[in-house]
Length: 466
Image (cartoon, rainbow, N blue to C red):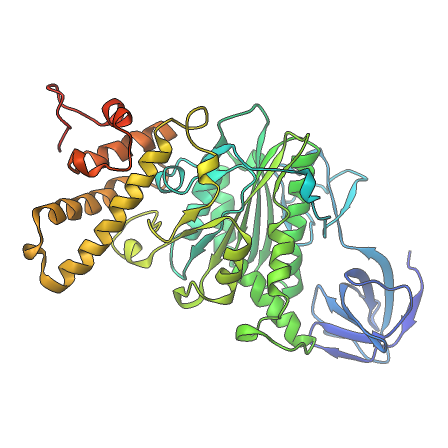
């Protein structure tokens, strides 16, 4: 059944259809275009002026004629049908099932644009999430309710890392159920197949909700996909009291689609052609994470973005860094040396780490151990720069010890198997093993009582040296 239709459009520019202005039409609401053959195409209103309305179609405009087309304004936003059956299902970017199973049977439709969380209702994130990856758990800890993006580059194993985190992530504190919402935007078919196979083989697909918008999908679908995924996450977190980890990849594809739509609307471009509202648009996604007072559930975000030319000052990672609470940076040099995951020790940062670790959460020595590892590894980088100038044989004995520490730290602590799941205790014990390479006098950032308790020692009480 169709409502009131208006005959004719003004013009069609690619996926954008321009029609005459009408009253009672709202931004981001849905519209339906019917061509001369009777085929219906769904679209979303992306611009409104005093003279015209711009509708971006979720499909191609082939066959649409200016004089032989009709347009209907549905006066409602795009919605996603939520219910108990969404976990374990695979949807496209618009929220339609693509796994061959029946649609969700529920009358509960949610506006995908969501509603902003009242700042006074937010609860400060504090609970530790164990990913099983030492470079994250030990030095860049993920906290429940945090937004912690992964900055990667083309060809780096960010997809493998994302799949590993989904397989292994779990909340150590609390009794609430844990779920993962995965959103893939503009990804290739083989990448989508990799994630599906990985989740099926590991048995975690039963607690994953997947939204896949492939590379050949319309640009507008990439803009909708993360909003649909976050709508599902909000339902699971705030109504089903689940801890939800949202993994979104690749945010660069999302921003490229936003730039394409902006250009089609003839908007004045900003840095590198992106629209001036890129910051606020990204914030509308990232700020849908968090914990709410009197609610057991939470949403933690792990957005993944590939930096063009490995440029961390590019507008996408630059603006993302302002909105989120830190970043995990993948380093090409580590990857080329065969270290997986190639998580850079120094550029990576978790701003909420200090509030989610320590006694009662991870272990009493975590904070001081991480500080000492950061300090030692930072000195390693300066020693390597010096060795490149004067030669390694000219270094002092102390500097040579630090060079050995740096090599061992990268090969044993940062590096681990793709299917190796380390507990936080294993990670911390491994950190102490790395510190035992250094003279005890160098451990100036750790209280003596913790050194006495945790530093590996030989039978006669001396620090263990390997």
